[in-house]
Image (cartoon, rainbow, N blue to C red; front, side):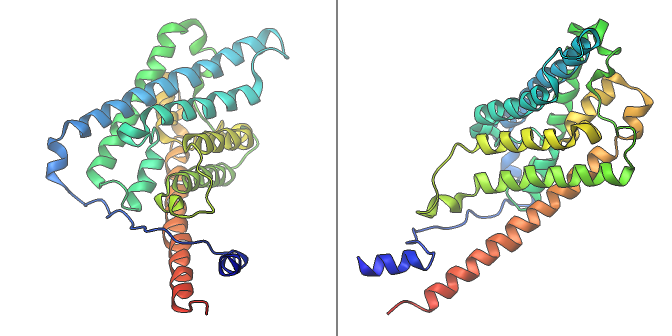
Length: 283
């Protein structure tokens, strides 16, 4: 008992057996022959379609309501809840099938960390982009009279902000999201008695919600290249295309930084600390 208390006082916890899963292969031909692979692509397509349908419809509905009443509509808070809530729901529904990425930046970050193969990552991004375009096309079909009038839900840099500010907002916002994804899905957490298990989609949805609160006034909040591409393709106006690169470069940089930080700093630091502890056992 005294020894257990001594361990706790040092800030460490009894270790459970744990082994990191092997890195995803760079190319696995057998993967392409499995139905589960194509089922995952379908899940990413449908999830991104539903995500864009609900969120873009919320944005357009809010703009149409505030034209008649400045206090009407869901407001910025409601829009942020729509994005964060849909991510929570869709990640919960698809995590067991495709991993619930619903975002090319998330897929890119996981690919850099060797969590998914490059082939799967590329095809996920294609499925997500096509799903986003289909979802916004559905919005336009349903709300055609409002769609073009209220900007089509397209992301663009807001007046008064420089390109550098917009790019930084996308980088930092995506870093928060992808870092949360890595942390919430880290299998090593379950090997620590100190960790209280949580529903992984919940912190991911909250990350999207919080980032939207911060960056809607700057860029409308992308942090998801597919979310920005879908409205740009269907709305097809110069402003949306002029700023489109920000919503790809920023999220990809943010995802890469998050992958590096989690995998090579946090995880490597934890391994060294554990090795040091085991090499100096308490007497």
